[in-house]
Length: 112
Length: 113
Image (tube, rainbow over all chains, first blue to last red; front, side, top):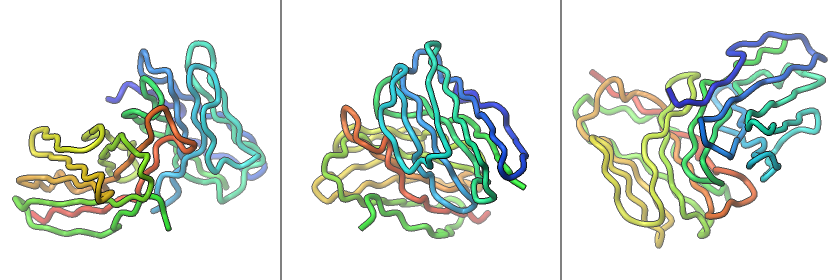
């Protein structure tokens, strides 16, 4: 158990809908990362937060947004969902910026 | 040129063999180097973490970093069928770069009983 908790584990939704993925980092970790992993693809960096502030942004679509709350948990919001958004979404956390990160078990999103 | 290159495999070796997994990179600013193991559709698990150059050993695993060649390696001794997984290298700049942790695409390793 990495100490990073992601909910829900599985999510099935229809095209055009909006979903929210939640991540609770390890105790004491200030940095949270979001990654997308499509079938047989590598980890695509979406966005990073550090202590509530956006720290870095990767190839995140405009339909996607995220935030980190004062209690350090983070949410990833995906809207106007398309079939191609079906993927595993991972959250990771680290104590500071860009040091060793620990991953949650992911949320498997299926858009039908 | 991709920032981190990693042979996707699959790499198939017999049980008990020494496995060598490698990544090359182009960004000389990378200072933190990590290896993750990912079982199918599960969250990546951190195996090794190294700062700058040198070797680090943890049980059956040894990580090596050669910054002059921009080349990192993970060695697995006495490989077991349970080591069959995808191995991802990751690296980052001190103080943070623009892309969080940069990952290779992973090498699929198969240990044959």
